[in-house]
Length: 304
Image 1 (cartoon, rainbow, N blue to C red):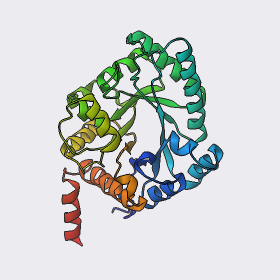
Image 2 (cartoon, helix red, strand yellow):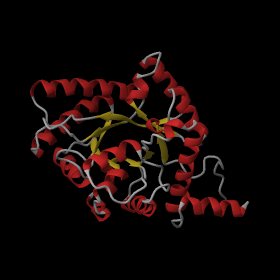
Image 3 (cartoon, rainbow, N blue to C red):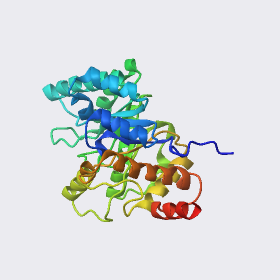
């Protein structure tokens, strides 16, 4: 007999990212909780931008009852030298301290886009190893994500090569479906990965199949993402989640949806859209077949 909370549904593995919502931190946390989610991915901007300061933001997160999926994002860390390297190490330490204060066990790090960064893989791996070592005393894992416009590392396959080369237990991968689909990296390459080294999976869809330039890729990523199942990559998203499950991944999925329209819509409306996507993925994709969200809603209305 299924005793699942009907509001929550089968969405325990899924959560929202604060960047997907407009408004103050407390309002975002309430909307996510009210939609039935049990976890939240936190953006540093939402935390440090709290009008009463960091300590108040930490209290709000802890009082929400939401588990923190992860904390983002440290950018352009690896491959720098001299003063630039020292500066980024200081920034990383601050990010790690906030991560620990918020109760997050994962810090998301994006591959460097800096033209000042080395392209020597041994140098990049050495820097990631250093970052991971800084995180160990705080009990934090570092999830390294290959941005699709990264200078040297721009696919999950090369990100995995770097993580493997660094060879530190608390350094793993962060996968983002947008970047997988933008670069058209074959999903068969997921078989190369150790599921225990995938620390976070971020999911989003978008509305067109082809991205013709790096500039369009960046614009789409930062302004036009939609929730899983709302765009034209629904079948690919379902395939990705099924493949990860078959591989042995049992970690978290976070909806990272940069969308200018959602910033102008009431929080509960956006959170409900996210909940529908989570129900589709959790109940239909991972448990049964692969109907798209619209088909799922029609089927439920017929049952009523």
